[in-house]
Amino acid sequence: MKPQKTGVEYSRLFKSESFGDVEIECGDGEKFHCHKDMLADRSPVFATMFSQEMRESLENRVRIGDFSGDVISVLLQFVNMGDWGDLSNVADGVYKAAHRYQLEQLKLAAGAELNLNLNAESIVSTLQIAHLYKDKSLVDGCVEYLASHKGDLSAMDVLAEAFENL
Image (cartoon, one colour):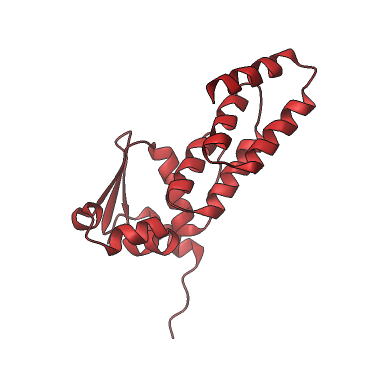
């Protein structure tokens, strides 16, 4: 009986380009060599993509032009190792990518990070994401932030701008 792989062993496999059977190309040109089985196991979107005669399956290449390598690296870390590391600088992109590839746990983690780091500069984009993805927890986080900063005129200006952009 073979021992089960540990996170360290999967980490080595994830970081190795050996035996990868699909390449993911990001919008910034960064490329990752991945394993279809791992992607398909975690994401129903990848499972469908690789189980049908879609271009990605036939060419063994997935082009994800609207996300940077930093975002896709976090997504792949989650797919391959079950964790996601630091989301602070990429939470918005990770949230959107996790939504697209139906990685609910990662999406929840990115949403929590967005709520945790709300400020006058980020609230507009977070409200836009909340509206676009109909995410009540993001809306609630923004409302809570605004309620706790109601004396701050700049927060109210930000809110007005957000509603103009919705």
